[in-house]
Length: 209
Image (tube, rainbow, N blue to C red; front, side):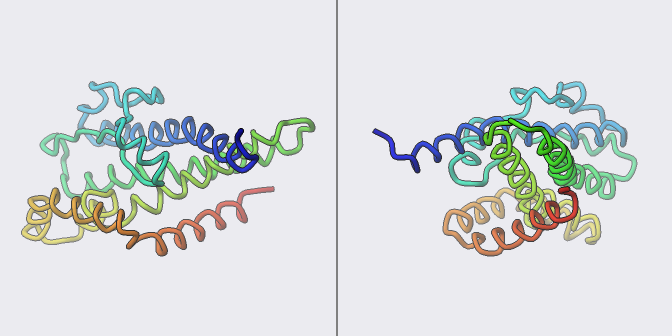
């Protein structure tokens, strides 16, 4: 027999699944939309402008997000040759992903604040809201880290000399492996938890009513 705590754990896990799928769909679609607007329709032609999670999710990355609190989706492909200003435009495309998650958290806060005035809504609705908002603020914080291949590194790289920029791209795979090792070792747990708490509390305190 499951304890009440175990049941609650499973409810959270089940609610995290649609929250994760929606959040990554918003994130990757934002990359694809901005890429298309800046002259590269590659992601658009690949069907990446969609809220259909099956166009975006990576099974391993999704499972990691579900149980470990971090993970990844299928990256949006960008053809730099289609961009008029490759470094600047790739930074803007990168920023679109985490920014879309922050906006999704704000929109969800406004929506569920309005729904809170409706009597009789089950508690699970507001539990989902809390999970979805926290997940999106977490994605915003994590992806803004200036570590390749995260979006934050693309933004920082726009301000670096070309020599350093292309050198980072060359070693991006190795930096990514080192980053995941540090994450598994818990190196980022405290700073990420703190930063996510700051952003989450800002969103709730500013936009909840």
